[in-house]
Image (cartoon, rainbow, N blue to C red; front, side, top):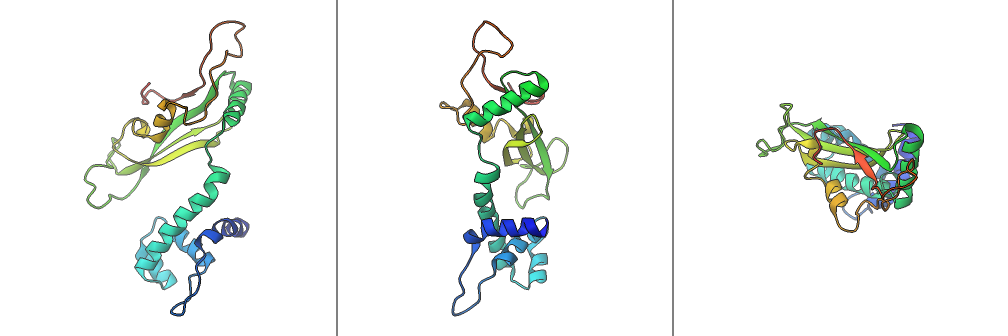
Length: 206
């Protein structure tokens, strides 16, 4: 991460993780909290504890608080659920590039390898024979993520789609993803209305 990006992140997340000094101790400053969050990722808290000279419980608490605050600050800016107008623009772009009418995204899942979680048994053991959590995402015509979901157990097949919130949003009455209403296909002069749709490989259930 560049210095400019870090400073921008500090400005967005800082107000959510700032702490006040007390009579007993000085608060951990914002920049250190962000560094702990990123250095703790993929490593043990004991490693970060030695590096920052903070106890394990402090490192653990800061990592959890900063992760939650980072999502809260960045989610509305970079990963908000697209509006109906956004889906229409995505659909128009797919039609412009690939001649696919009413198409709003390609969806797929990815097994992210993890170390076996304590007392998890085979919950996260997948068909590829390693432990994982599932990252599922949809992207637009320019390969930019539009919707993501992460954290389902690796044993779920079909990219975790059956257990996903995305599936519930698609099936929920009231249209949780704000997809546009059915409309006539762009290359049809007559005929019935056709829904907006995602595509996926054969692993995903219809």
